Structure formats: C-alpha cells, structure tokens
Length: 357
Image 1 (cartoon, rainbow, N blue to C red):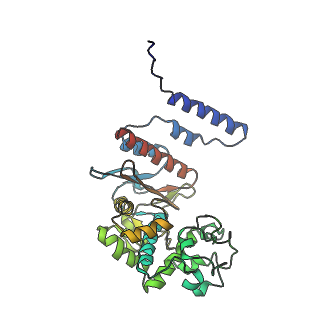
Image 2 (image 1 turned 45 degrees about the vertical axis):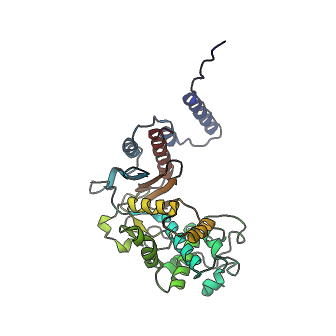
Image 3 (image 1 turned 90 degrees about the horizontal axis):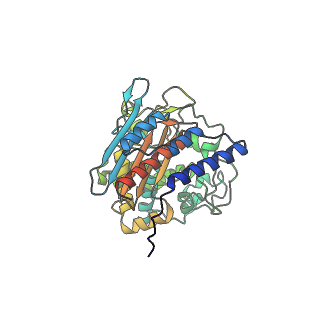
C-alpha cells in the first residue's frame, strides 16, 4: 500500500502570491500602494501581545493601550509609546481615554432598559418623542426609536457637515444638532442602514426627556455602579484632564485632548479595563435582564469602534476564545486607522496561537 505524504503548508507562499497580485493590480490601476500598511500585514507575527504593542509604535502610532480579559485568567494590560508626547510621559494602560463611539453601547443599553420597563416604546416616532423637532427633521413622523437605535433613520450625520469646526470644542448639544436641522434625508426611513452619529445624539435627548434628568446619571446608576466601574465618565468635563491620555493627529502637531465633544454617543471617557468589564457583562448577559437583553439584541450590536481627532479605539468580544480585547491608540488621521485595525487583528491572531487555535 502506497503511503501518502502529508501535504506541505503553503500559507506563506499563498500570502506572497496574493501580495504580488495586489501590488500588480494597484500598479496597473494607478492607485497609490499603501506600502506601510502592506508592510504591517506581511510582517512576521510576534509571539507576544507586548511585542506587537512595541511594534505598533514603530509603525508611527504615538501610543497604544491593550486590555485582554480571557476567561479563567487574570486580565492582562499592555502599553507602549506615549501618554503625553510633549512631556515624554510613557503610556499607562490604566489611564482614562476618550472612547468616542464606543459610548453608543452604553446609550443603547440604557434605552433597552427603559423600553423593557415600559418607559419608552421602540415604535414611538421622533415627532412624538421630541415634538419640537417635528418640522426640522425630515420624516420625523415616520422615524421610530427603533430606527434611530439601528441607524436606519436616514437622518444625515452631523460629522459630515463641512462647516463643523473640528478645531474647537462645541459644548452645546443643540449647536451640534443644528448642523443637520432642515437638511433633506439621506434616504427614506428604514430603507437601509447608514451609520449616523445624529441618531444617538437624538437618543440622548430622548432619554433625558423621558428620565427628567441627564441620561449619563442613569447610565452610572443602572449600568456602571452595579459593575463597580468607577473609571468611566460621561464626558471630559467629569475627569481631571491631567489624567486623560493625550491625543494626536497626523495633520496637527499639538495635543487635541482638550477638544471636548459633548454629543451623546461620542462623549464618554473610560479606562480600557472599565470598557472591557462593561463589554463582557453586555455579552454574557450579566448586565441586563433577559427581557432587557432581548430588546437590546433586537436593536444594536455587541462590539464597537470609536474615532475622534487624536483617538481611535476598538472593543470586541470573541466568543470562541471567551475573550474581550480592548485597544486604544492616541493617533488619528492619514492611514492610522488602517494601522490600528491591522495591529488589533494581529493581536487577535497572537491570542489564538497562544490558545492553540
């Protein structure tokens, strides 16, 4: 009987072929080849998360914080680069960070609790919930709370207005909302999905109206305190700015930390550990009751990314590894988001290899 030889692994060879094909296609179409991103992608994978964090700084990122919570193990913290570049303060994995759109997870969870309690209805329209805006937002009488939560409203995103002043703080929520008032809808409500920060700004206002007080107070009472999260804040104004990680953009040499973005869904500040604990509780069902969890599952996602001038963040739970990984990078602009995602994906590969996957 002839013995069959085991097939040799050809993953490296296939990757090289794919790289060559990609380079040829890009060259033939006169597209600028992102060689720095390609270099990260093909670089040998380090054996440890810390080594990958150190490499991230070599890629031009100012600082990086990584939090890893694997079931059955103590949470691990990694950092590299700078917390404050000007003062040469090293990155601290326990420092508060502007988490940007990761804030939407907290707002969606708060909304799910209020819907479950009967204080809100997913079928209520924007015109019913915020009647003063019924003539200022297209289809306000058709857009429901469910559509706002699911990013299916068709309301334009305030960040897309070319007049928005990214170089200064806009500390009044209504001033932010004014950038989209009276604008035509991007599409008819529920026709499709399109991510819009305006949706969660409006949800924040709806929660405030329903509660009779600031929804961030409700988030603290109902979501943060039960989990013991004392390093999560509703806005930059609630934390000592000296403690917060500085943020840098490739287009601007200074520190952008004091740019304050107050719009609900983008305003929160937290440590990587606090975000990780919250994310695990959201995913494993310990944060919400079964009824609340069912509402949440029907309207929003269980992971998120965030991006503000000087800040980018990724928070995800991996069921197959029962692992939460949070990554903060205090650099934005240019192709830094591509680098951030590549670094994060490589960290996941390292963890899988360590787990024998």
